[in-house]
Image (tube, rainbow, N blue to C red; front, side):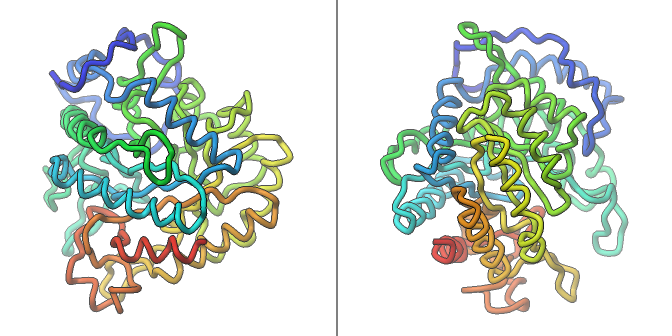
Length: 402
């Protein structure tokens, strides 16, 4: 049975969730597995990974950012590995978050709400069901919650037992993150909190718990979940589930988003217009952001939703080298981030912060700064999925943003 700290704030009974009958994209194919029902039952009876008091603290911190009184940093791996859920590795990641957040606080003159892409970032959406690895066509790697990174057809099969491994790894990471909680960066109580894309509905739904005192439902797999660009359909399961939970929530907004759709998302997910409830994570690419973002900002502001605006300048700026390796140019990342800030400020809104995929070690996955060119990428290209900034590059983005 998965184990973590005992939190007595929640009831653990599960009822059939209406969103689980709705369509959903990017989901694993594993319901035929002989142990699926037993695994779901085990997760549904597991202790929550985070407490509702912690979730509310994270929401309050985001509320300050929504009101223009704080900044936000989301930082961490594109895809976590179960093998990294040890105290030393987690401690290194937390220290990197604190270091980058301290630079953000110094440069902005405001306190920073800090979130790690950790303790649950084990599932990834993919644009294709198959990928070619060393000339062999295989089922796409969808994160260790779903299948293995190993380039083998059997290892790439979707396995629901991995949800239990994800739970155990997340519990270990959360324990270590809590050991590092302070009031730094700068004087903002609490954090860093954990965040991940709540992609796999079987896993996330099994970890929804009800607060006995208030009747609110909380997603206890994380403090701050977000919906990705590929799963934000208005009539699908992810949006329905997010509308029901009391966590602070995020939604990725890409270049194909239109103002009407984004306002409708705000109406569904933030009906009471609560500061800190909803964060819009803009990931449009350095060229599209100039055209796509201004009308969305104007429409959301006219509708009166006090959202937190942050920039993800990573996902819209991925390119491939001649050898086929994915990378990102730091100059492109900075270009989108600074354009985002200029647009928000021109529209009279608060450019609250940044959502960055970054490693805590000196990887060579993005070109720029200490990684002079594409040839240098092979020195320490270690990501399980998309290329990450190294710590020096992340600090450079912060310096250019402010």
